[in-house]
Length: 138
Image (tube, rainbow, N blue to C red; front, side, top):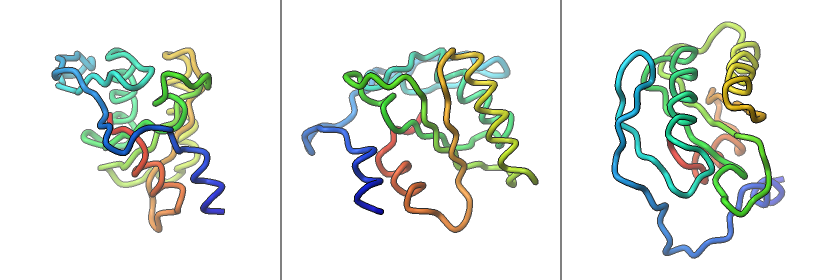
């Protein structure tokens, strides 16, 4: 099973390549100004990243760590969905499934693309560890 999961996320690239980032950009998230790195390697712009961060922090706590993983990281990939892995700072909601679905629907309406949300919980699964390890932190 581990090998099967690995094939889902491996991006062909040289091991010496590092993700290219532009200088930090000032982005208005609606409730405060936040500095984020605008990544040139992924298919999201700074407004998309700001919208994702704002929605995730509203549901899972300010300062929650968010990773983008999957096909949205690869400019050559044709997949149209956005896969997010979130490590919340706030306690998990009583019904985590409903919170994940609500966040996914909110982002799908705003970004006009399918969104899959994976939220960290104990114990970490192999899928969660891989999403974090191979994803790009927003």
